[in-house]
Amino acid sequence: MKNAKKIPLGTKLLYGIADIGLALQQSAVQFFMLFYLTDVAKISPAIAGTALLVSKLTWDMFNDPLFGYLSDRTRSRWGRRRPYMLFAAVPLGLSFWLLFSLPVGLTGVAAFFAVLGAFLLFDTFHTIVSMAYYAMTAEMTTDYDERTSITSIRMMYGVTGYILGAAVTTMIAGLLRDSMGWSERASWSTMGLIYGALAAFVVLVTAFTVRRKPVVNTEPSKVPAFSAIKGTFKNKPFLWLMGVSAIVGLSFTLITSMLPYYLVYQLDMEAQLPFVMLAMLGTVVIFIIPSQKLADKIGKVCTAQ
Image (cartoon, rainbow, N blue to C red; front, side, top):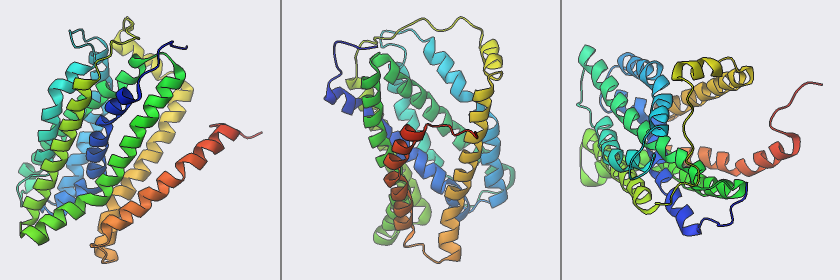
């Protein structure tokens, strides 16, 4: 469907900027959360890994549809999506700071619940903000090309943030430790504060500046939540896609979590860690466009003839 009025480039840029903060945090967590817990906070790898696994298999499995459901049904003078960004941006920044500010030397049950609680708190606010933020795209316009343009600009910010999170996290912590003489814990905590403040700031920039009245503001589905979920899991193509996505996600998680350990302890390349991360993600970026062109040419799904 075409709209007569195009969205100004400035609005697209202001909308997309929030993703740099969200992606920065996500990247730092994926690449360095486990490494921080074991090598900086000195928490047992078994306890740290178990706490993160429990958080992923419980609350993190359900909070996306939950907050999406609540966002769809929110009615306020600020619209459906903006309230979640306005009021959760600062808690998001503080929770990320807390995530990388755990006391050193926690053991046993205390360590398990400290990791579990800190991660669940951050994951809750990250989901609240990101679900509302990403849902704004479809409400800004009904024009297919304009939606593609908005998403492309947002992803440019997102890729930048993700690369920075992988490449400069240990660099910032190391610089504070070596140049300022700070402890390992203080250096990582300050890194968490910087990332948290940046994420809160850019989310608020988007929330305060992108005030377009939604052109898509339809009533949410009347189907009960349980029935909708049950119907979704009867969709076989969706189940196949979910299975493949789970395998890809697991593989990527294993690589990103284990790579810092491999570089530090097997290759003795702790100083080169930021450059290796940058090279790896840079390679991914380089192949995005060729992969898109290949998918456009042969289709996204290949079936045996």
